[in-house]
Figure 1 (spheres, rainbow, N blue to C red):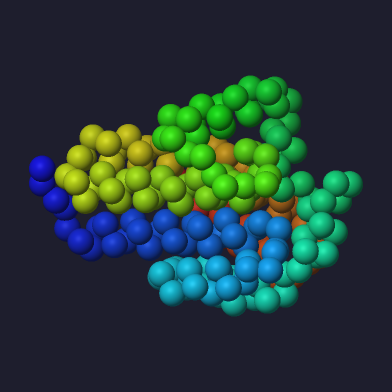
Figure 2 (cartoon, one colour):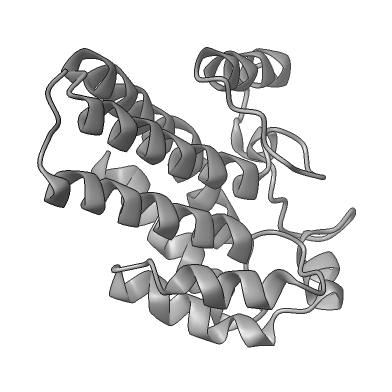
Length: 187
């Protein structure tokens, strides 16, 4: 079994950390939320996302529920942005992606929540890094292709929809959504 260069693996792990931070920034703030973000930011090399994370001290559970809760103008769920597409089909597709890569998130949100989807992308970066480290180029390529497709078709769509509806709230939220939308366009 051939091992790959450390720099490629390190970059993939840094990307995984960045996506986990993005996922955390879009979760409901809870007591340990801020400290998790701060600890994980030491692994993040992306300057735009690090800047988003610095503003997370403005996040509160009250702000989260006011912006993303039931009856709020911004839904953090992808089904809200799927137009005439069948929501059941979308949910089944997400479940298939998660099952194919054995993704079982620790979550309180539905599987189409933007934070769960961003967490999945981070998980795929870790799986790709592991495959690269082991020299398994076929698995790494399959994972990379799935990650790029998922980022574009799911995370990017949800982030773009949320940005259009987000007219207020802490600046870090708009910034992290712009970061996700940009990543969705690059995939």
